[in-house]
Image 1 (tube, one colour):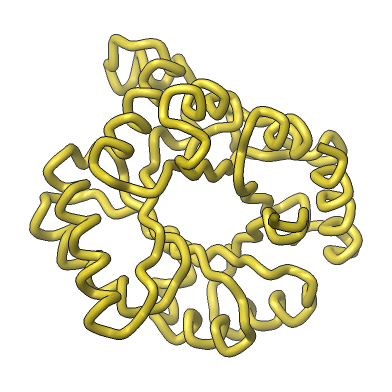
Image 2 (spheres, helix red, strand yellow):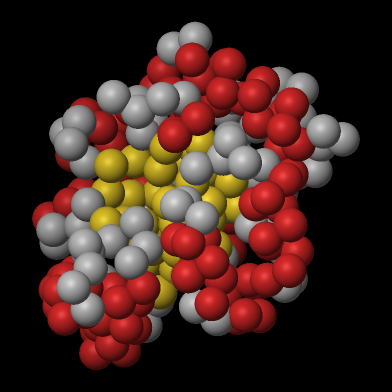
Length: 239
Protein backbone atom coordinates (compact mmCIF):
# COMPACT_ATOMS: atom_id res chain seq x y z
CA UNK A 1 0.00 0.00 0.00
CA UNK A 2 1.48 3.32 -1.08
CA UNK A 3 1.72 6.12 1.45
CA UNK A 4 0.16 9.48 0.53
CA UNK A 5 3.65 10.93 -0.03
CA UNK A 6 4.50 8.15 -2.49
CA UNK A 7 1.45 9.02 -4.61
CA UNK A 8 2.49 12.63 -5.20
CA UNK A 9 4.78 13.25 -8.19
CA UNK A 10 6.47 16.66 -8.19
CA UNK A 11 7.67 18.05 -11.54
CA UNK A 12 11.19 19.39 -11.94
CA UNK A 13 10.11 22.17 -14.27
CA UNK A 14 13.40 24.05 -14.05
CA UNK A 15 16.00 24.90 -16.73
CA UNK A 16 19.16 23.31 -15.31
CA UNK A 17 20.49 20.32 -13.40
CA UNK A 18 21.74 22.58 -10.62
CA UNK A 19 18.27 24.10 -10.17
CA UNK A 20 16.72 20.63 -10.20
CA UNK A 21 19.02 19.19 -7.58
CA UNK A 22 18.57 22.23 -5.37
CA UNK A 23 14.82 21.64 -5.45
CA UNK A 24 15.23 17.91 -4.78
CA UNK A 25 17.48 18.60 -1.81
CA UNK A 26 15.06 21.23 -0.50
CA UNK A 27 12.22 18.68 -0.52
CA UNK A 28 13.74 15.51 0.96
CA UNK A 29 10.32 13.99 1.73
CA UNK A 30 9.38 13.87 -1.98
CA UNK A 31 10.10 10.38 -3.30
CA UNK A 32 8.75 10.69 -6.87
CA UNK A 33 9.99 13.35 -9.32
CA UNK A 34 8.96 14.15 -12.89
CA UNK A 35 11.56 15.07 -15.50
CA UNK A 36 9.97 16.72 -18.51
CA UNK A 37 11.08 18.14 -21.82
CA UNK A 38 12.68 21.35 -20.57
CA UNK A 39 15.02 19.72 -18.05
CA UNK A 40 15.83 16.65 -20.15
CA UNK A 41 16.69 18.74 -23.21
CA UNK A 42 18.80 20.99 -21.00
CA UNK A 43 20.94 18.36 -19.28
CA UNK A 44 20.13 14.95 -20.77
CA UNK A 45 20.11 11.67 -18.84
CA UNK A 46 22.57 12.92 -16.23
CA UNK A 47 19.68 14.21 -14.11
CA UNK A 48 18.11 10.74 -14.13
CA UNK A 49 21.28 9.21 -12.70
CA UNK A 50 21.43 11.93 -10.05
CA UNK A 51 17.86 11.21 -8.96
CA UNK A 52 18.44 7.47 -8.85
CA UNK A 53 21.60 8.00 -6.78
CA UNK A 54 19.32 9.77 -4.29
CA UNK A 55 16.97 6.72 -4.27
CA UNK A 56 14.16 8.63 -5.97
CA UNK A 57 11.50 7.31 -8.33
CA UNK A 58 11.53 8.99 -11.74
CA UNK A 59 8.71 9.83 -14.13
CA UNK A 60 10.36 10.59 -17.49
CA UNK A 61 7.66 12.62 -19.18
CA UNK A 62 8.88 13.07 -22.76
CA UNK A 63 5.50 12.45 -24.43
CA UNK A 64 6.83 10.63 -27.50
CA UNK A 65 4.74 11.15 -30.63
CA UNK A 66 6.12 9.95 -33.95
CA UNK A 67 6.01 7.10 -36.46
CA UNK A 68 6.27 3.55 -35.01
CA UNK A 69 9.92 3.01 -35.89
CA UNK A 70 11.00 6.30 -34.33
CA UNK A 71 9.08 5.93 -31.07
CA UNK A 72 10.32 2.35 -30.79
CA UNK A 73 13.91 3.55 -31.04
CA UNK A 74 13.32 6.28 -28.48
CA UNK A 75 11.61 3.89 -26.04
CA UNK A 76 14.35 1.30 -26.49
CA UNK A 77 16.90 3.93 -25.51
CA UNK A 78 14.80 5.25 -22.61
CA UNK A 79 14.36 1.71 -21.30
CA UNK A 80 18.05 1.71 -20.37
CA UNK A 81 17.73 4.64 -17.97
CA UNK A 82 16.09 2.76 -15.12
CA UNK A 83 13.19 5.20 -14.82
CA UNK A 84 9.84 4.16 -13.37
CA UNK A 85 7.32 5.83 -15.70
CA UNK A 86 7.61 6.88 -19.35
CA UNK A 87 5.06 8.64 -21.56
CA UNK A 88 3.89 8.43 -25.16
CA UNK A 89 0.92 10.12 -26.83
CA UNK A 90 -1.94 7.71 -27.46
CA UNK A 91 -2.65 9.61 -30.68
CA UNK A 92 0.56 8.19 -32.14
CA UNK A 93 -1.71 5.24 -32.97
CA UNK A 94 -1.96 1.52 -32.38
CA UNK A 95 1.14 0.47 -34.32
CA UNK A 96 3.32 3.04 -32.58
CA UNK A 97 1.99 2.11 -29.13
CA UNK A 98 2.59 -1.59 -29.68
CA UNK A 99 6.08 -0.97 -31.06
CA UNK A 100 6.92 1.34 -28.16
CA UNK A 101 5.78 -1.17 -25.55
CA UNK A 102 7.88 -3.95 -27.06
CA UNK A 103 10.91 -1.69 -27.44
CA UNK A 104 10.90 -0.33 -23.90
CA UNK A 105 11.01 -3.87 -22.55
CA UNK A 106 13.80 -4.80 -24.98
CA UNK A 107 15.91 -1.80 -24.00
CA UNK A 108 15.50 -2.37 -20.28
CA UNK A 109 16.18 -6.09 -20.54
CA UNK A 110 19.40 -5.54 -22.48
CA UNK A 111 20.54 -3.08 -19.82
CA UNK A 112 19.58 -5.38 -16.96
CA UNK A 113 16.97 -2.89 -15.77
CA UNK A 114 13.36 -3.23 -14.68
CA UNK A 115 11.29 -1.89 -17.62
CA UNK A 116 9.56 1.41 -16.96
CA UNK A 117 5.80 1.41 -17.01
CA UNK A 118 4.83 2.96 -20.34
CA UNK A 119 1.74 5.14 -20.02
CA UNK A 120 -0.22 7.00 -22.70
CA UNK A 121 -1.22 10.65 -22.76
CA UNK A 122 -4.95 10.72 -23.52
CA UNK A 123 -5.35 14.48 -23.97
CA UNK A 124 -3.27 17.31 -22.54
CA UNK A 125 -4.97 18.80 -19.49
CA UNK A 126 -4.41 22.30 -20.85
CA UNK A 127 -6.97 21.53 -23.60
CA UNK A 128 -10.68 22.09 -23.11
CA UNK A 129 -13.74 20.65 -24.82
CA UNK A 130 -13.84 23.77 -26.99
CA UNK A 131 -10.20 23.29 -28.03
CA UNK A 132 -10.89 19.69 -28.98
CA UNK A 133 -13.94 20.57 -31.05
CA UNK A 134 -13.03 23.90 -32.63
CA UNK A 135 -9.24 23.85 -32.91
CA UNK A 136 -8.50 20.15 -33.33
CA UNK A 137 -11.76 19.40 -35.18
CA UNK A 138 -12.38 16.19 -33.24
CA UNK A 139 -16.15 15.45 -33.44
CA UNK A 140 -16.22 13.48 -30.16
CA UNK A 141 -17.05 14.69 -26.66
CA UNK A 142 -13.91 15.17 -24.58
CA UNK A 143 -14.63 12.48 -21.93
CA UNK A 144 -15.34 9.92 -24.65
CA UNK A 145 -12.16 10.86 -26.54
CA UNK A 146 -10.02 10.45 -23.42
CA UNK A 147 -11.69 7.13 -22.65
CA UNK A 148 -11.07 5.80 -26.15
CA UNK A 149 -7.41 6.82 -26.00
CA UNK A 150 -6.99 5.05 -22.66
CA UNK A 151 -8.74 1.96 -23.99
CA UNK A 152 -6.44 1.93 -27.02
CA UNK A 153 -3.42 2.08 -24.72
CA UNK A 154 -4.79 -0.79 -22.66
CA UNK A 155 -5.40 -2.90 -25.77
CA UNK A 156 -1.79 -2.27 -26.84
CA UNK A 157 -0.41 -3.60 -23.56
CA UNK A 158 0.57 -0.30 -21.95
CA UNK A 159 0.54 -0.06 -18.17
CA UNK A 160 -1.73 2.96 -17.93
CA UNK A 161 -2.57 6.46 -19.02
CA UNK A 162 -2.24 10.11 -18.13
CA UNK A 163 -5.52 11.99 -17.97
CA UNK A 164 -7.40 14.77 -16.23
CA UNK A 165 -8.92 13.79 -12.87
CA UNK A 166 -12.29 14.39 -14.51
CA UNK A 167 -11.81 11.34 -16.74
CA UNK A 168 -10.42 8.93 -14.14
CA UNK A 169 -13.63 7.21 -13.02
CA UNK A 170 -14.70 6.32 -16.55
CA UNK A 171 -11.25 5.02 -17.48
CA UNK A 172 -11.02 2.85 -14.37
CA UNK A 173 -14.48 1.45 -15.03
CA UNK A 174 -13.62 0.43 -18.59
CA UNK A 175 -9.91 -0.46 -18.30
CA UNK A 176 -9.97 -1.96 -14.81
CA UNK A 177 -8.43 -1.12 -11.45
CA UNK A 178 -5.07 -2.55 -12.52
CA UNK A 179 -4.74 0.04 -15.29
CA UNK A 180 -2.54 2.80 -13.88
CA UNK A 181 -3.91 6.34 -13.99
CA UNK A 182 -1.64 9.34 -13.45
CA UNK A 183 -3.30 12.72 -13.10
CA UNK A 184 -1.85 16.16 -13.75
CA UNK A 185 -4.32 19.02 -13.52
CA UNK A 186 -4.44 18.65 -9.73
CA UNK A 187 -4.82 21.88 -7.78
CA UNK A 188 -5.54 22.24 -4.06
CA UNK A 189 -8.29 24.70 -3.21
CA UNK A 190 -5.65 27.09 -1.87
CA UNK A 191 -3.71 27.18 -5.18
CA UNK A 192 -4.28 28.94 -8.50
CA UNK A 193 -5.42 26.84 -11.46
CA UNK A 194 -2.70 28.21 -13.76
CA UNK A 195 -2.92 26.81 -17.31
CA UNK A 196 -4.94 23.74 -16.30
CA UNK A 197 -8.39 23.63 -17.91
CA UNK A 198 -9.72 20.45 -16.28
CA UNK A 199 -8.49 20.52 -12.70
CA UNK A 200 -9.59 18.88 -9.44
CA UNK A 201 -8.32 18.98 -5.89
CA UNK A 202 -6.02 16.18 -4.68
CA UNK A 203 -8.77 14.68 -2.56
CA UNK A 204 -11.25 14.70 -5.42
CA UNK A 205 -8.75 13.07 -7.76
CA UNK A 206 -7.91 10.27 -5.31
CA UNK A 207 -11.59 9.69 -4.60
CA UNK A 208 -12.20 9.37 -8.36
CA UNK A 209 -9.61 6.57 -8.53
CA UNK A 210 -6.30 8.22 -9.49
CA UNK A 211 -3.20 6.21 -8.61
CA UNK A 212 -0.68 9.07 -8.77
CA UNK A 213 -1.08 12.84 -8.77
CA UNK A 214 1.25 15.32 -10.45
CA UNK A 215 1.34 18.49 -8.36
CA UNK A 216 3.81 21.15 -9.39
CA UNK A 217 3.49 24.88 -8.83
CA UNK A 218 1.28 24.67 -5.73
CA UNK A 219 4.28 22.98 -4.08
CA UNK A 220 7.38 24.28 -5.85
CA UNK A 221 6.05 27.84 -6.09
CA UNK A 222 4.97 28.03 -2.47
CA UNK A 223 6.70 30.27 0.05
CA UNK A 224 7.64 27.13 2.01
CA UNK A 225 7.54 24.19 -0.45
CA UNK A 226 7.97 21.57 2.28
CA UNK A 227 4.88 22.80 4.09
CA UNK A 228 2.87 22.86 0.86
CA UNK A 229 3.90 19.27 0.09
CA UNK A 230 2.77 18.20 3.56
CA UNK A 231 -0.59 19.93 3.06
CA UNK A 232 -1.15 18.00 -0.18
CA UNK A 233 -0.14 14.72 1.49
CA UNK A 234 -2.52 15.40 4.38
CA UNK A 235 -5.37 15.95 1.94
CA UNK A 236 -4.59 12.70 0.08
CA UNK A 237 -4.40 10.82 3.40
CA UNK A 238 -8.03 11.71 4.06
CA UNK A 239 -9.28 9.55 1.18
